[in-house]
Image (cartoon, rainbow, N blue to C red; front, side):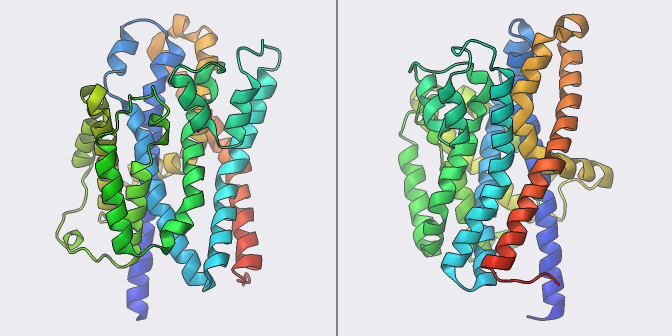
Length: 372
């Protein structure tokens, strides 16, 4: 490969990372907006109106991005290590360093803060399932009507992290499958999922929606193989206007397709999320304005912390009386400022250092690369 081609590939990778950060930031804001009315104001028309679009589909956008990044990460680690098992071990340690420290910190702080409250408010099972990455099973059963859950609003969002960590376990096996076999497997799973009824946030099956993760992973495998498809060379780059339109359709699908069509809604949302992810890889940058792009990048860098801490912070703001004093809009503005500051601090002091430590360890002792 020529030096010009390597430089071009490096520039393309940086542009994709910028776009993925932007998408992560957008997904985080969507999830926060979807939860804000319920955490800050339990009554009134605001809840009714803001609940019309299912902005929680930002989680599915997270899943599609994660699946794509997982495939890319496994490919890169395998290229660097030259050995499958070393690449897998490095992958697991790096993912654990990225996800676990921040999650465990939030779980511990939540447990300490609520220690004086009745155990019926936040049972031990809620804390343990969140920390052990089994929250999708625990809260999925609770949403389906099983007993044993406390304040589901505090930690129920950790179900998505549990599902992602569980997908990490099978991703290395999927990496061994030839791309054409993975393509067929993804199509079969999507087809079957169309006919499986999974009410939105009301069933155990809903908490195991792997469609976006699988599609993102498949796209990442295709991308790593330099795109066997021809269409990326002729499809135009994703524009901001088109992105807004696609996200709007995604958010309306779960409200329109209910009951027997809930499986169709979940599959459709996964397809839209994956389409947005792969199209973002064709764009030089989704936001042409540098200032706006920089803000999007920052939100993307803090998106994991934002997602982790937004329920407890919004609940605390809601209980503080700010809603009655400043109204829903004022309380939401305060909650977003507090959320961004805390997310920045957590990312800087815990999240990024833990991930960098995991990267340094795997580079030196598993991939056997020495720092210059």
